[in-house]
Length: 499
Image 1 (tube, one colour):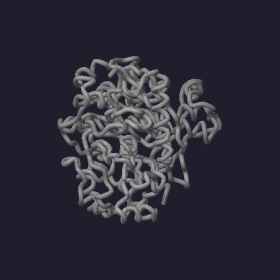
Image 2 (cartoon, one colour; image 1 turned 180 degrees about the vertical axis):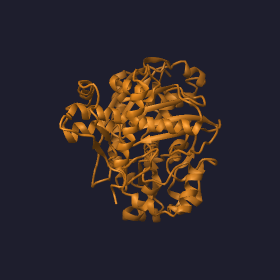
Image 3 (tube, helix red, strand yellow; image 1 turned 90 degrees about the vertical axis):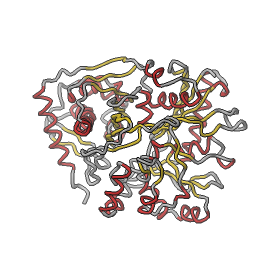
Image 4 (cartoon, rainbow, N blue to C red; image 1 turned 30 degrees about the vertical axis):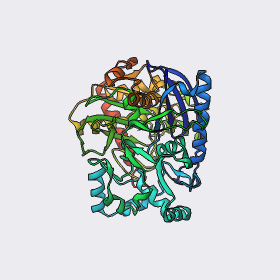
């Protein structure tokens, strides 16, 4: 078997990439899906459409590569995390649109959970109570969609994050599909105990969720099932890895050692720090999460800082304000001025995630004068990505007691060289971008390949990691300090907006 496939189901699109033994991309295909916005603060996806996109991109990538599906040694799955849906196993259809991780509709419900339960949830899951995570989304679907409660009563309802939905369909759907998830996705639900790596029945009771709807929790790297010989791929291929997208990026960046860290720049920003087999509970607003579990080996854990809006802020400039026509235009526009002219943009469109966890915050642009131009706003947008990342990394240093000397980066914004230079300046450390930039997809491929013996061990995978470019700070310390002081002042202006 010459190749490994990686199905990367993200917030805005679905991709299938085919990798060879050197971790190089042989072929890929990508298709977007609809962003459904029924009302302010609500974000939904059509899960049936997502499954259709999965089939399409897999077929297209294989055709582009000019290979048969039987030449795939394994398939790995990586996915947008927390996004939640419930489907009927007798019809194979979703019972409502999936509620996306960015969705804020359960903010009020989360705020009403009693303090003692919030403390219990934080202790056992490593997560604060927030609408970001899956549990309150499941509760909302149960209480507000009659078809869901009816299917639960009949025993036909199945909950899943997107990985479970894809796996169930890919392994046969109504004709015997398996209902599983992995530890990384389960750790994002507010329902899994970090120590037992299983659903916690006390936590299920808080959200009134019946255990019968939940998938079994497995490791991140093992053979869960095979594709159907009579299915759209026409072959029995091992489905051998599931990793939440940010954990997959850590694997793709070869962050296998305690102390390794990376930041992924996508729709939002996600920085993770490997803490090894130790569960480190954050005292500075970060999440404790499962990093991966390979087969029967012990689980590896991480501290994570999540920022809701980074790359999507650039899309907002394009789609809502019309400041740019293409997202790639922001670099030249921002570079046309020497600085932001005192303008600060805090894109708290759906509240603030780590390290603040304030769902009452909303976005602000401050410091505007008569001299401010769209170029200043563009530069302030790039700086906002970097300042939000600095807040997270400062928390990581405080929690771990380990100063960061460099950071590995990946994701779409890393192609923006001005943004990466600003990031190095604002952090005061070296930024390293790898040669293989599709780290999320290659991480899922690595985990699948390990499960079937395509790659021998993680030492072999480490040899694939190399640097394509690095940036070093050129900003002086006083400018860096003053800029961050004003950023924090701008953040304070976002708070208490939603009453």
